[in-house]
Length: 158
Image (cartoon, rainbow, N blue to C red; front, side, top):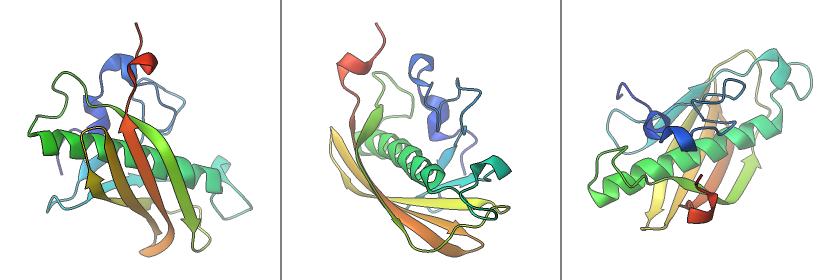
């Protein structure tokens, strides 16, 4: 894996997301990377006891937010790759969520590191679709799809 995560290339003014922003000390600080073979993306996250739904299991909203942020990070990385550009080169290719679909397949246990794997299934200039799985102890517990769109100019800080 690369030393820097996709999110590390986000410009500082666009790095405040609760799920993946490096400038949000209260957030998840999710970090996403290309897999060793470069065909999919990978992130790991260890839920804390306060991420509880019921004792012993992860709150579904956390799982949704991890899928969301891994999806938009994957979208950014896939867009840079498709454009033949280096990550972080300007203008920034920053994506936001247009649609988030999550299916919960099995209860997700607390106390283990979760693995997210993403596959860009459609990459266009202004839209990227990413399929994502969440696994705990090697078992897929959730899957999702993120439709990410280029961040509109109206969302960018002045």
